[in-house]
Image (cartoon, rainbow, N blue to C red):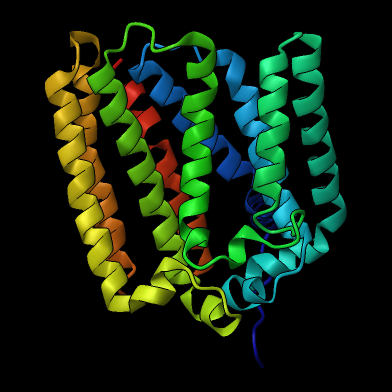
Length: 293
């Protein structure tokens, strides 16, 4: 007689919580916010006022993407796509609440610059998956890979910089740190697009991995990892005493974590690996800041 194993109630609750965190993009939104906070510490910026914007903007854009059916997603991430179909109402509520925060907060604070940036950024970001301008940025050859890293970098660095200026950060440190931030997010995006290569190619989406192929993309990731380490070492050489330990930790932990991911994705990995481990790299700079004290 076959024995069926029924998950216990705590296990079921944990699985449902995990599904909510990833399907509603809560984990990813926290990751982007933590990444922005860490960059603010390295540039001596007080970024507390901008963290709600980063968090809500991520929730808005990614939940809008989930609500729009994309044949490529059904092939690339079938588990999350099925979960998104079940959570459409909740995803729509998260989207609306996030949009309200992004609109009301700058109005209450009479911060018209931020309001203009939020409105413009939202239109551009939503056009990634929704053809607001008559086409999707996602369908432009190669732009799928470059879009998210560039938008996130512009948001987490541009928003405080336009309000605060460079502060006590010298121009060289700002330039190296900004370039490394973009390259770090590119590494994350290329990994995700490498996972999505089959579905993207089948649906006519020409991401960077689709154009380069599997082998070419892996070599690009190796080269990008080397560039990330070189930039981190450059930032370490320029760092003040307050930041030297942070960059030292990043120089050590970065290649170990990212190199480990590169080795791991040589074989097919489940969606959970990308949701937890690949997206988890966004927390690495914040961990380095906290560990360095």
